[in-house]
Length: 174
Image 1 (cartoon, rainbow, N blue to C red):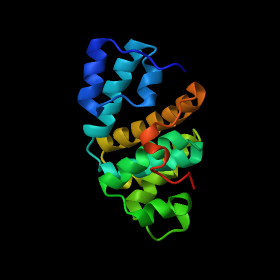
Image 2 (cartoon, helix red, strand yellow; image 1 turned 90 degrees about the horizontal axis):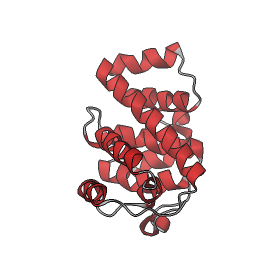
Image 3 (cartoon, rainbow, N blue to C red; image 1 turned 120 degrees about the horizontal axis):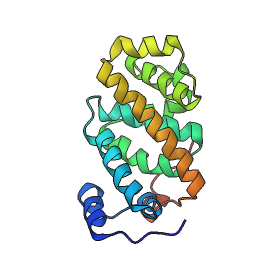
Image 4 (tube, helix red, strand yellow; image 1 turned 90 degrees about the vertical axis):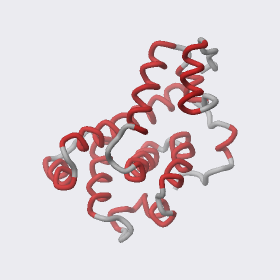
């Protein structure tokens, strides 16, 4: 996908939110209206959410593992670390069900993430998540799982390449 040249208003908004646009936004920029909508939605999920950022970053990393999305993994590994996700959790994430690293809330959210990726959220998973989170938080977590499932699929479809600043930053997907 060719890198887009942004109109000045969109360029300014992207810089306000994230600095220099990453390759994902350069690819999306081929459709300015959708890029603008995407940008605001992604910003709301990242910065206007009630649930802890570290919890949502675990969801995103798990999504990247399931989808084998190296781009999503590389970008969000850095964000997860910044949000305070312990290296031991990152290392154990692929086998979270068999690990003692994760508490009950994290387990519920990781089960939700896997269920959304499989397009099959069971009543049991739904009930487990609802034990720990309000209705608004459940919406937020569901949208996070769904949005990043879409991101991983879109990255693959559009053949978005890793940004130079993360190529050597993160280890390959586990």
